[in-house]
Length: 126
Image 1 (spheres, rainbow, N blue to C red):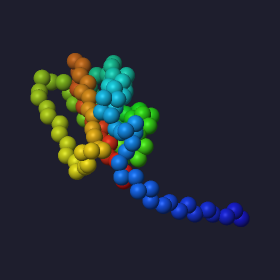
Image 2: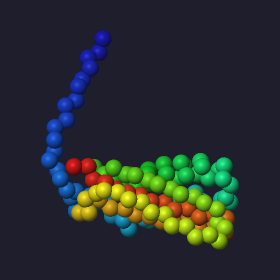
Image 3: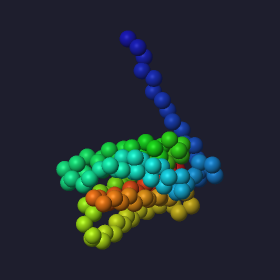
Image 4: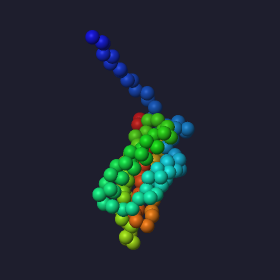
């Protein structure tokens, strides 16, 4: 039978991202905006469908952000979709992080039928 190889990972002691590997909110926001506009442009709000849309959008946004190649970042995506009914809404999140390396970006999509808020948090692995 084949031998099993055990990989032993050693600490890298990399405590901060390189300047060209930082989580840039402007680039991430562009990715969120592109994905949300493409996905939601022709949609009308239906509560049953909105449940699946949040899952699909979260996965698509995460994939788009990972393509930006931010190594050693944990990407967290949160999407909220609601019916556009002349109401007000405030979406907030809290997180404990290092302000020198961690960051976030968000985008809000609206049409006549629905609104959607996409938030992405990038937390650096030490």
